[in-house]
Image (cartoon, rainbow, N blue to C red; front, side, top):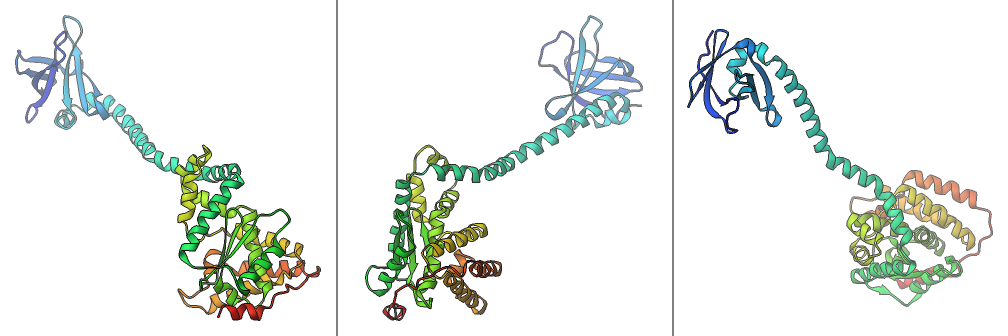
Length: 363
């Protein structure tokens, strides 16, 4: 049996140079005929040949046989060209094919693992992000926290006028003083914005929109919201969210003591959104603070119930802003209702604030 056409190869005679010589190869019966371009033909019995894969990803075949003078002669044939020879002499290539298949599987596994490395790195970083965030927050001194709060407040001033006098301003200050504990450094600011919202920033900064005061029916309802926001400050939820949102570069910088980028990042952020667990924790601490200050805790529940009704009746784009940053889910309302019922019965002292005068000053 003869090949339909000779196969191109490169011939490396025993003891020859390392570059080899172009040749053609064909199988005639049980004899492999090697036709080098620059030397006499050679005939080798098929039974004396050995074949093995070579090269990157086993892309070549090395066919070798012993030389009479010692050493081995060798042919290198590309995988793309060896097909006709393999078809008529499959036994010669059987061992190399097994090696080739096993190697290909290992190669594919290696490529797959290599492709997964970036994903695994991202997963590992995300898994460690909470730990890194906690480490950064624990190391930030109060002075830096106040600087971050000042940066957030500066951005707030650019977005709307701060009200710093009048009945509404005095009401916010009076409620804040009632809720503050001895030695706490808290700042309460009132901004002229129509959205029903309030938020807390690091360093004890609490900002209330005038729209929230307009919607509240009493000082106790506003006190419930402020107690919740103060709890976010106390628990450092705002600081933690800012750090977590800042990204690894800023986090690693903060771990090294460079807080400048963190303050700049905080100034660019909008109002932060907290997890359901954080909201529940702030509700619990807020209720404790209301009880300490002898303020009716039902005010917090009434205000969120009012917002829940507005959410149910509202249209897209017209919902209270407080619901986007402090989601008042039905589950949360039920928990607040149970918690305020349980907390009820303690002594309360009404907030001595003329709420009609407050509301009238904001019209």
